Amino acid sequence: MKFSMIFLVSNILLLLSSSAFAKTVSPPAPSPTPTPAPAPAPDFVNLTELLSVAGPFHTFLQYLESTKVLDTFQNQANNTEEGITIFVPKDSAFAALKKPSLSKLKDDQIKQVILFHALPHFYSLADFKNLSQTSLTPTFAGGDYTLNFTDDSGTVHINSGWSITKVTSAVHATDPVAIYQVDKVLLPEAIFGTDIPPVPAPAPTPDIAPAADSPTEKSADSKSSSPSSSPDHSSSYKITSYGIWGNIVLATFGVVVMLL
Image (tube, rainbow, N blue to C red):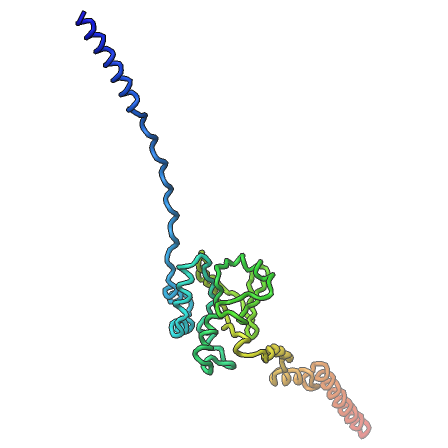
């Protein structure tokens, strides 16, 4: 009897412990969803290196460094989402500046001129078609320092008031930095005023006079047209001479016959 009770109690305890163990064991947790890798950061763009290799843009780069504008442009290129667009004149464009000249400007004015050559946003060449529909586009110089763009079948023309130029090539055009070469220095009206000298008219094309006849040709023509060189006049002269001598001979013969 005692053995049966012990067996029954042990079975009950075993069942209770099994159910309790089943409650404490939970199903395995699902594996976490992998987090997508962050997008790679854009490559650092070194403006000094770009302008040193291309061009030559040495004069513009010297102005960037002397005015500290290079730091402003470099920060905009790599630390903002807007990016930057820079218009860079070649060394020959600065050398062509006679009047007005940058040498007569103050330091803060030169800085404004260099800031005037950049837009605080990245623009591809295709973007200028839409940009040309706006009348004025602000530059890094701010305020009244604006540019006017027109798109002529893919050729981008820039009007600064004093300067009318065009984009001749793309030095670098990968977001967030666009650098375009221009053939003139952009001069703002805010510094140089509105008394813009007229563009000189193109020189007239000289009329080409017909080539004069050479003296040898004239002498040859005169010889060929003179009576002494004409074969017809020469032959007629010979026939006339023969006729006169013939008459003289006949007259002399007749006088001799009469005397006989």
